[in-house]
Image (cartoon, rainbow, N blue to C red):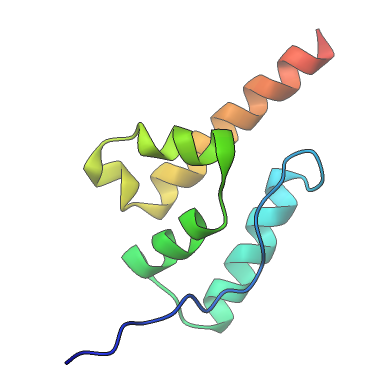
Length: 89
């Protein structure tokens, strides 16, 4: 039986009210690179760090987008940018 891989990027959940998205993604990508996480595993690691509204956003993406790190990153950036604009105005 094949052993199931555990999540290796121990970065915690992203909370937008506490941590800036770009800072979080920079930290995440640095750890992913150091741990040689790539492709779909990197994407799964990122979704493991999401909860609430951000996780719901990802669940609404197409199956292909759900497996693409850049697609998820772009969706998060667009959502976060919209939240910031609402807060300013």
